Length: 384
Image (cartoon, rainbow, N blue to C red; front, side, top):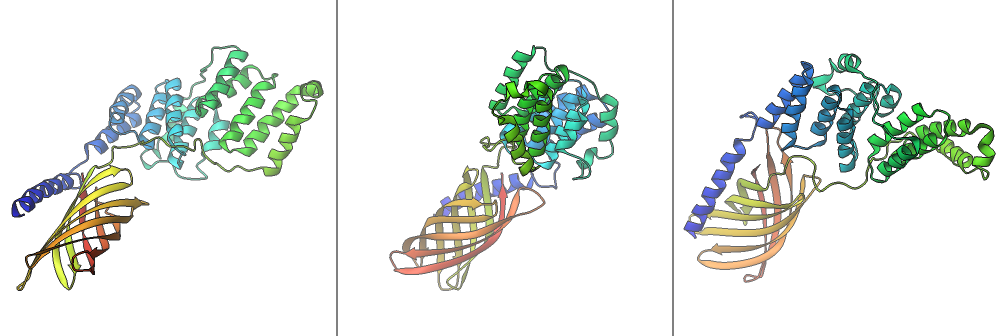
């Protein structure tokens, strides 16, 4: 038993060293690479910024980095790549305020100020801190009138509709706007754009485009829409008149961001049967919100020595609450006992890095002694 404890102790100690190396005491290489990429943007070295962001994205594809990469691509003149990357962010999950900021700036760089203000305005929220003093000047200086469409209206409309079915909304937004600019007297691009904005949750925009489409029909309205389908839908949109942003995409990818830590080690104290026990734990993450943990406890009092081991399966709710079930084997005064039970607790993340403070309450029914044993443990966990 001592050899097993020694081996597990060495493993846990190595894990703790690994964890401490990732806290704020040591600089994070990922943060440094991202800082260099941002510096290139601020220095207006956009091609170099694109290269640096691409390197960061090899190991970190969270929303913020992807959105910043799209902004750098647009500043460098690669608009197709910029909006395609924004779509990649949209498909992953619902956009946040930071993502909407970068969407708006890419659209402004493409000279679509009216569309950009739909997604984000400085009157609603603040820009990212690193860019707050420079984004207006950068966008104004490098704005270009560009086109992503080379097809005729029929092919372009088909492509726009396909983009919507594939949830590539940003490309569809730009493509429909280009179609409206190229064919201002055709009603179909307005109708398509209205349907797209409605699917995004922007009812007022959908109503505006549908109204413009109906106006373009002119005297042919009765022939194009004899049953008044478009007009009835316009009335419904105006009655709703909601600008609520719902979602670009309901489903989420399996993971978009840094690879999560797979292991954890814990050191703490446990109180059981009026006895304080030194407690160590090793855990392995089996999923984004589940893990398996092995606990080892040791206490030596004058009259007895207690050694315990617990194996538990746990679920993590809201990244804080831990609920689980497990098995325990304990040896006290030379006698073995085993049991099964439930546990519940909290894991409070610390700002210094990948670590947390943990408190856990467990109750086990011991089969041999036919008794209930309650434990309360408090300690510190590192993730690596």
